[in-house]
Amino acid sequence: MIIVAQLCNFSYLCYMKRRITTYGGYFERFIETLSTKELLKLHYIISLLETEDRMPVKFIKFIRDGLYELRMEYNSNIYRVFFIFDNDQIVVLFNGFQKKTQKTPLGEIEKALKIKEAYYGDKQSSNH
Image: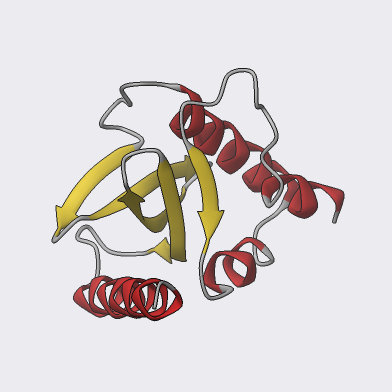
């Protein structure tokens, strides 16, 4: 599981435009379900998010209310990871899932929005 540790330790400080972080352990639980090759592809896409000013729509899509999805395909499997931009330079990764329908399931979006709300609630309470 060295790759899992690498996914959670983004250290490209020379090239970073954004800092990647996670919240609530959701992302970590999601990546434990992925194969090594899927992890490598996800690592590549996250490194683009970390270093590039603009991302192709094939990798990122705005959902609503400040929520985005990171999009990954590997073989015939489709995966999504929800995230937010916090102050433009911090990306906070939330829950991920394997997509099995044409549209992103509303239940997954609602879950991500609740995680986002909890994140900002925790952030606000830690500032007081």
